[in-house]
Length: 178
Image (cartoon, rainbow, N blue to C red; front, side, top):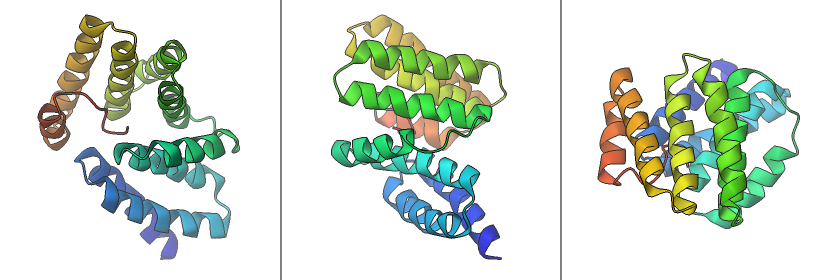
């Protein structure tokens, strides 16, 4: 039962993050992480750590994000496609925060390329939004706007109207997982 509760908490946290409730998502993710660490489930630990980075990033806590991202980068690489996409997006955000938008663009494009080969619509949208952030940092505003527009189109088609509303309120400036 504890495993099911932790897995469900992670799912709920992902939804909370997508609609802008990062603080609540972070609490759930930290609780789920404790359980998955206790049982040694590396796959779930990797997923939880990806989303923990995202929730901290969404709360604009760059120093803590970088600390978590560095620790995440040093963990065991779980090579399923979704984990690889998210790993590239965490890396892209890390590069942006460290002042390397060119490397951020490269990492975001790697994540985007992986996402384009899947039916993971939200991950595809997140990759586009991360790419848009990198392009903004490179003063390529028109390209960034196009990437954001494509992400919003994907989220609308998916029916993720809460994420669309949140991004529209923010002016499309931040990705749901940033």
